[in-house]
Image (tube, rainbow, N blue to C red; front, side, top):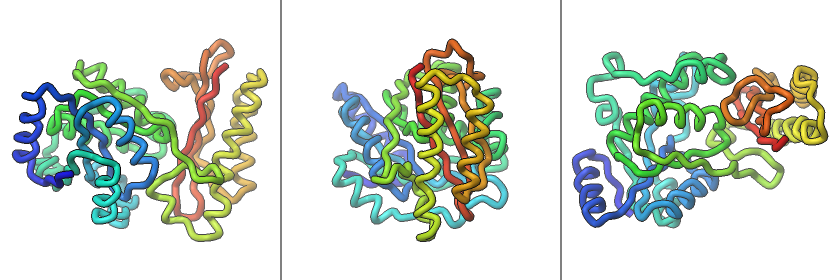
Length: 282
């Protein structure tokens, strides 16, 4: 595996691969990699001859008071994991490479509507930062395939919408959420939890499972189910931002005739914000 920081070196290598007829997959990350990230690399490897993993902690998707400065940066560990996963390139651009005109003068990519609900309501501007940086990484790598995790369910729908609207020739693939043995979705931010909080954390997924079971059994009192989920989280020691049941296809309002639902939640446990979701076939 090659570690590259310079975009010109990256483009030269990518050009060599493309002249040989090879397809390129990108796995965008912010580092502090865990088994969930490695599962994305596996999906990328199954769908392209070459895999580029990016590690870039993107300042434009963090709001005021969020954890940009303290976000875990573990590049040596990440490098070892990616070598074992047989990634071809670890691309580690700096801020000047991704935002050559500076953050204040940066052209931004905004996906309206879909980004202004759920997590977007509680983190204003977050998804604008996500779409902006992903569009820039796409421009730098020009991949044929991009892989995102389903744990960030809203994010992968936003990326799909952006790619469709901009007619980008990129196939967007998603990989299932990877969980700890007790059901907690793997996340870089899980490292913020202290021992007592870590014991409570699986209740987030358990609350989603309870709602999903009722939906699968035919319950359609969506507001009541959402409220029961919020109450369960509060009783478990969380401070919920939202528990929501939506159409899995586009995050539209849940309706009795939806073919698939997604149950989503975001909640604070101590100082850590956790998100999770569960898709339910109607």
